[in-house]
Length: 225
Image (cartoon, rainbow, N blue to C red; front, side):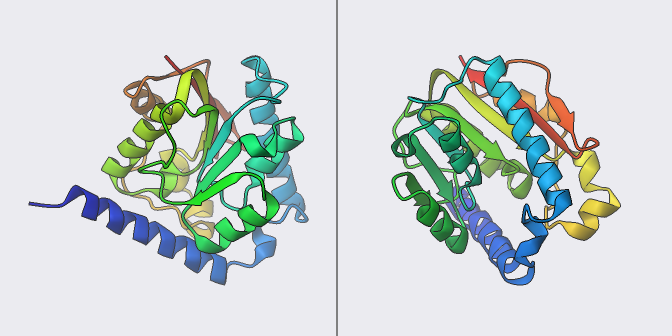
């Protein structure tokens, strides 16, 4: 009999190796906002999130407890702090050690932990707001994706909000994504399939899912029942 936890551990190790290799081989300038193209994409993404938060009545973020799943170097958490959140109310989880270290340096009073997200190390209903950006796109294992969705729902309080940003299946088949990214192509999803999976875990869309950057990303919000 296959050990489900062993399968998840193997997938987590695969993801960790991919991002470690990316950290070693991709120049930091590739994702630096000093590059005009990267800056444009960053501002577009930020505008989308600000609009979603404003639409849902979340500003200011002063007392908001927020978690970033797959927080990387802490970019979204830094933005949340700039929008009023207290650093001590911020938390993140990241699988890749060097990115984790950078996040901890940038956010010394935040609760930044290492892990894959399939089991989140926080109690039920710990957060008002959870954000994840292209984490599901990075996961091949369908069971791990289900576990991640279930865990995000578990740590959100009733009425809490999930913000999500993902790459749709059809974009991963384009030349740009095949050439310039390391996202896996197997077991991918479109926006409606992603929303349906969230709904199975009690996370229901709050409005129309938006597309940005010529359809490269879909962005939306879901509220916990």
